[in-house]
Image (cartoon, rainbow, N blue to C red; front, side, top):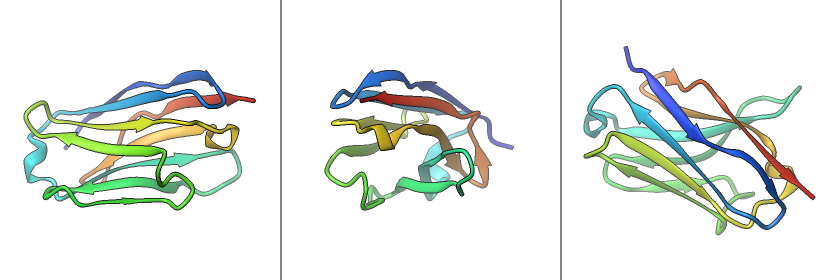
Length: 111
């Protein structure tokens, strides 16, 4: 079983930046794909960004050029740097790895 503990997030004005971090309880070097997802009330959870063990990344079209996902295998963390945030980025963000989810972190962007 993998425990994923998230940190970061909060309230920011439109155009601002936030950074999310996710610390795993295991050596993530053996986890092929890790990612960040988000969910708003009444909507399905959607992929925001994913990163593979060899560093390949993929992003939702809505965040391309603004968000950057990274992983630090030495620290067993995966991070999401969010720049130029928009009100529509407001959601609960979840870290995902190995079929496990983090606890969720609220990100609120005010206009």
